[in-house]
Image 1 (cartoon, rainbow, N blue to C red):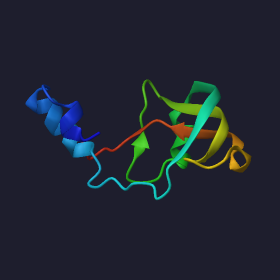
Image 2 (image 1 turned 180 degrees about the vertical axis):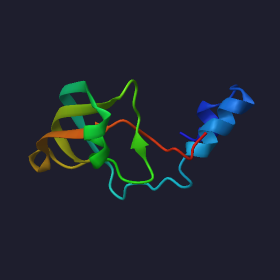
Image 3 (image 1 turned 180 degrees about the horizontal axis):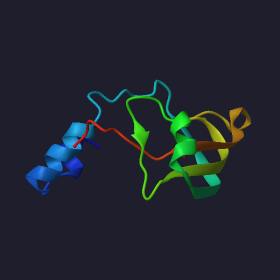
Length: 109
């Protein structure tokens, strides 16, 4: 979906703000894949911002409130993951997790 599609009817300020963070070019994955999400869990923790700063690369900074930053952990389970149109015997289950720290770009307005 393009930026112009989902911002249609929005204020000029909202459109300008979205355009400033929209990627210059979106690349399509070379193989279409699909699967069914069976389990998902998202947990967000509050942690001292000072401890999270070591995890955040420049130019970003920890998005903090009253000295605390936020760390999210997501766990996901999928079944029948594979290339679109592939037979069932070539599909697999996927279980994984990822963590992220809430950040902001200090140069963005």
